[in-house]
Length: 369
Image (cartoon, rainbow, N blue to C red; front, side, top):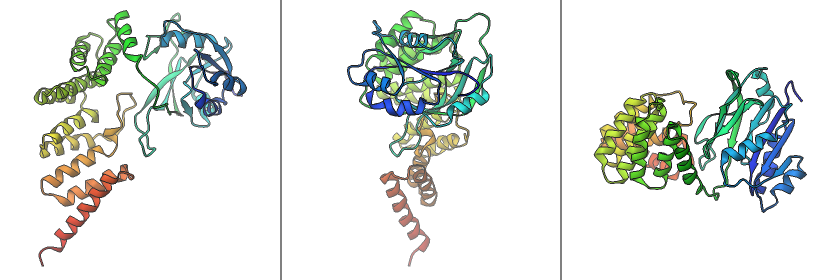
């Protein structure tokens, strides 16, 4: 089809509902190979009918890296570019041509835009840049969960190419359980105690599970690790520690950790917004205005997975609107409420706020009769 032989490879289990959409999206590749790990619905039959090459095997004990590596083994040796996706992901059309425009012989991996989640109104939620496209030789998946590609070849890996026009969207099944993540993360940390990334993910998972003390202990350990030098991720650990303290009923300690997160990564909106929200709960309106203002001064959205949806949506303007209202500035409150509504036009609460503030400012403009 193009200058290079492109192969898409994937793992799956009981994902019949996604097969047609996924095959349509991946059809630009020369080969599509799938490792099915034990589907009991019609996934395998549907994939075969659509032209995928399917191998069925049980991976026991279950590990994502083991499954990914086995699926990579199914990729033809003659492939030039390997594209790892899941069946709940969809490329925008034309992805192959855009990938081939920047790929060259000797390249190692490609980075491309990935929309991990969407808001209820269909707008983008969490967006970052993925790196799951790679050369056929020299790579291996590592870690039982949150697996990543590691270079295991001789010498240095080829350079990373930036595939600006390639867009992959994630449309997961909301009913799918993530119950296996915690034990696999604990296994990851046990296998490689000095891996800072896994320590961070484990602490975050404890936060998701409401295990506040385990979250705090694990993330403080993460921050103490010599390899934990990426400021974005360090700030995220500090924010999660703060959130855990807030849940434990210790708002002052939470505030201190949020301030540390701001100092660690002043280039990110998230720490400012988290602190602004804490101050909103405490009705510290001037504090809300200051920290949302700091957040909004950041206008370039980072390409890392740390970038969350809320700080780039209606939330900063929504908080500012409320703060302006409570400090007796309805005109400024209306302006911010309109900005919030423009970013989330289907939100009835925001629409109601605009309506109330419009009436309030109209009366103010008319003055006393």
